[in-house]
Amino acid sequence: MSREPLRPLRAAARRAAAVPGALRHRRRARRTAPAPSLARTPRPWVRALALAAVTLLGAWLGLLVVGSVEAPVGPVDTRMSLRPSPDGGTEIDVPPLGSLELDSHTAPLGLDVDIDQLDPERARALVDHPERISGLEEQISRDVQAGARDLAVRSCVAVLAGATALGLAVYRRPRPALAAGGLALTLLAASGATAYATWNPKSVLEPRFSGLLAGAPSVVGNARSIVTEFDVYQQELARLVTNVTKLYDATSTLPTYRPDPGTIRVLHVSDIHLNPAAWHIIASLVEQYGIDVIVDTGDTMDHGTAAENGFLDPVEDLEAPYVWVRGNHDSETTQEYLEDLENTHVLDEGESVVVDGVRIAGTGDPQFTPDRSVVAEGDESERSAGRELAGAIRESAARGEPVHIAAAHNPIAAQQTDGSVPLVLSGHVHRRETRVMEDGTRLMIVGSTGGGGLRAVEGDEPQQVMATVLYLDQDTKRLQAWDEITLGGLGLTTAEVSRHLPEEVEPGGTPSPDPSPDSSPSPSGTPSGRPSEEPSD
Image (cartoon, rainbow, N blue to C red):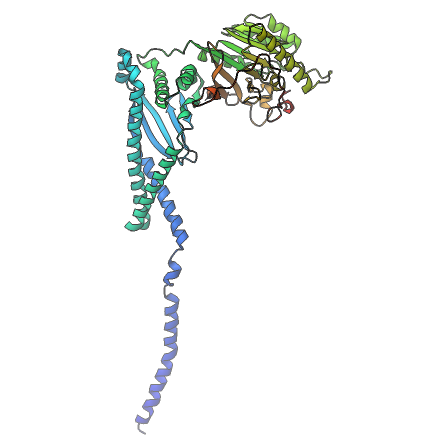
């Protein structure tokens, strides 16, 4: 039988057998094929976020690595740099004493100024040629401007190079890398414009110092100079740097820094509550600030017993007169003991005393709360004592003896003197508050100088130790500035000092009217927070 008729059948069979294999190869190819390009492409907002992250990180790295400049400012060598900051501001580091913080501007960039060292030659030139000090302000202004220009140029280069380099490392393509660099430069320019628009030249008048307590007066500066010569910002900046220079007098030939003798310095303390460390703090402040008079607004004791009286003996060793009014934790026994000590002036029922030309009137707290056998009379008794104090102040003014400072333990009593005295001091509530009342009297409440005494260890965190230094004009006896001093908890080695100016002496401020001696006091409301109800007893 011939095979030719069977050939078509065999060919058809081979083709049919080949179909499943082709289908299998086609399915395998589909499984191994790459996904469509649309699935690999990120969404636009993802790309934008990634570019922003690369830009910010690269700009920050650039500032960190090459974004600082060394600039001589007067007799000191400094290093200026920018840093990312949500609040802006300027921080001046003065090793080893601490740092000054200035609310100079609001922008996402902060300025750091590190005082590296004092240049001996430039400092000696100032000593050998005192006439050059008159031109120091202009020189420092020029130095700061030159350093700021160099810092701006260096920062532009730093953020551009940092963002571009990181963009190349991430994208490996020049176009997105250049986009990151351009965006970084734009953000820096916008931040600089915001800082310029929000620049606050008065910030140098109210610096916050954090560091060693002994260095605080020198770093913050002399109050009288600051409040009387603030017209030009460059002048204050010059004085600030000059005071920093004087901190290094121990290792140089510069003369010792001497505070202005025309400023009267009053130390306000309160609520010591039997904390013996308070006497060391007060003695240190008296020495460091050259205090002329100490005003204690009471609660020196805890229970007012005769057994506690020996705690008061260190008052005689303080190098400044001690003016005291009774608090609600101080008994008549306490008051009698203090009256017999040297160096003390106990005020009660509107009595006044003149210390270093300043007339101070005060009254004791009418309540003695440790005595649980007596029902407390409450706020009305405080108001009555305050009205009695105000009446005594007006009578003193009528005799030609105006009172410059009033003192009462409870703020409710102190409020009754509104309109009869320029300044009234108080305590009791273990927190700070300063405000001008309706009739022009400034009420200043200081926190606890004893850190709450034994109460300091009752809570989760110890109470802060607080005191205030007041600077008064020698002629008018009016308040020129004050420093709020805060020790952290029970620690005695570090402190924060914050400088404040009354509104009437700030640039552009309007002087507040003098309280009229014969105007009747207008009782105002309880200070914010209702201090009378706070647990201070």
